[in-house]
Image (cartoon, rainbow, N blue to C red; front, side):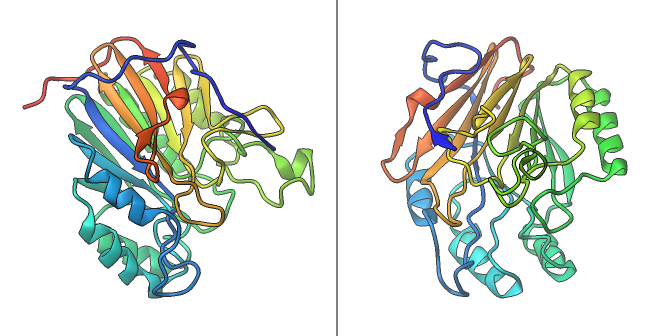
Length: 294
């Protein structure tokens, strides 16, 4: 894998900054607090927390899975060092680390107050949250849950963003079939296997503009040996990976999604330098169902 810089996915020109009345969503993932030992903070979560306080107008922070470290013993760290210190509303989504055992998944439900899956509307924008119910690297989404996703998308016409800790197969960096195509190149697959039924549902629902994932440990500027980067267009939809903030070779970056009336804008934020990485901005033009702020 080579680290190269991607250019904009839909508009090769550098996008203009977001409008003041845009809906602003922040996304980080794979903090794995305490994975190196209970009571030990890792990665860039302190820098992230500090920088987040300097960014005004965040409507919702999505913790896109992998927040906990090794098990039940590290959940107190998640609560005291992260959840109790967040300066904005948040949605904590279950990832593979949260689903390590039935006990850790149950503790996730208690601590987050969230169901495994949910649909949330915010200013006319539909956000679909799909949690992970099993531990592993290549994790399927059960057929019954896929059916519920299809029904949810058919209920209303609304610009839609889907958050799931794993990417769909053959979309973003490290979502390909390494085990089948290049055994030994990478020791595991990190994706939703058999993703075609889900892709077909998304293709039937053009209102779905983003599939936001994590889990693969890829940097936002990475391109894997299959030519897949951390962002990848599929028609009018963009697949976006969020790199790991705190687990094994962490990156100090997260993603921000700005929804305006005539576009969606994905920006990359470096929490260590406290600046936007403008060459990693991606724009999806087109009308949205965004409503005015209250």
